[in-house]
Amino acid sequence: MKYNRQTPCVYKKINVVYHGVPKNASTSVKNALYEYEHGHPFDGNKQWIHKGNEKGGSIYPSLDSIRSDFEDALHFTVVRHPFERFKSFYSDIFARTTNIRVGAPPFYTDNQIKIEEKPIDEVIDMIEQFSDDEADEHFASQSSFVHHDNCCIVKMEDMEAGWIDICERLSVEHRPLSVYNKSEDIVMLNDNQKQRLYQRYSDDFNNFDYKV
Image (cartoon, rainbow, N blue to C red; front, top):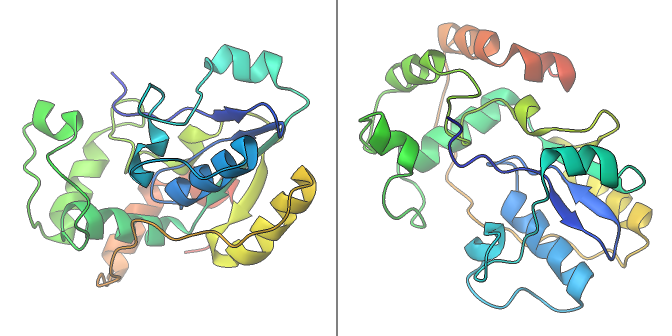
C-alpha cells in the first residue's frame, strides 16, 4: 500500500508537469504554478493546494497518462541533498518545529507509530524498515516521485537560479517563490547516521549527483 503518495501535477495552460517531492518546497511551487495557470492566487489555505478535490487546486492524471499524454510538456522536479531532506522530515514530524501538522497521517496510525519526539537513530530505524512502496511520502526516496525520463532537475541548493530557468522555459514572468512550511534546522547527524541514510537513499545520491 502506498501512503499519501503525491503523483505528478499537471498545468495544461502553461504546459508543465511538476513531479512534486514532499519536503522540497512543493507547497511553494504548486501555489506559484497555480497562479501562473489561473492568473490569480489559490484562494484558501495554501496547504490545500495539494488536494485534488473541490478544496484543492491540483490536477493529478494517472501515471500512464503522464507518460503518454504529456510528452511535449516541460517536466520538472525539485530535489535536495538527502541528508537535508531527512533533517526537514525529522524536524517536522518528530522534533515538532512547525505548527501546521494536525493529527497523524494514516501511515503512522496504521503502523502504530506515535507522532512524538524521538531520537534520530530511532527514526532511522523506522525508515529502514519500509520500502518506498510502503513508506509515508515524507520519507520515501525522492527518486520514487519522478515518473518521466526527461525530467528537468532543480536543486534546492540553487533554487533561485533554477526557478528563474523554469520561468524562462515556461515563458512566464519570474516571481520569487513564497516560502511555506519552513521548519527550524536543529538536527545534527553523526557519521554513522549519515552512512545509514546514504544506504537508504542511495538512488537519490546517484540519480541527482549528491555526495556524502
